[in-house]
Length: 193
Image 1 (cartoon, rainbow, N blue to C red):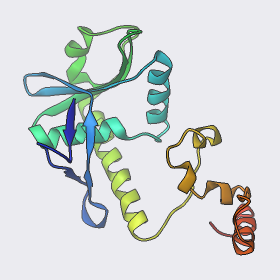
Image 2 (cartoon, helix red, strand yellow; image 1 turned 60 degrees about the horizontal axis):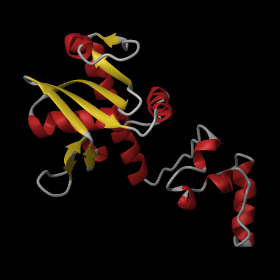
Image 3 (spheres, rainbow, N blue to C red; image 1 turned 90 degrees about the vertical axis):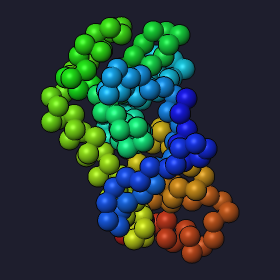
């Protein structure tokens, strides 16, 4: 495991301008071959591996591309892949640069992922950092557009108790006052959030 933002490694600055931010995290594993690296996130089950890959594909979970960018800055390595792994079930899913084909071939279990051309791979990592930076900038400017992709995920979210999605959907907690109820009704109608 590699923690950064505490202990031996500082937080990593990502993004530019008003959206620049410092990323902290804990990476489960980094495999290296020469100056190339692969970032690995362990999951408890094969289902968790699939869910993580799906959340990434849907643009919901930027964790591994952000960690890949952090590894490149911390260690002057070129990350050529990242993957989610359920070791006990020998299930893995990931995204790889075509440069990593030989590296992935030695560890393949199941079907090989689509390898991205080098330019596509670099664009993927850059796009995720840019989206995160844009989100940070929007939050700093007071924007908070609620964009619940899947209501089922809200119940499992660690931040559900502080998120306003219940007001947007018109479900106001019993303890909310009349003013909050009026705001919730307007928000549910699309009049505000």
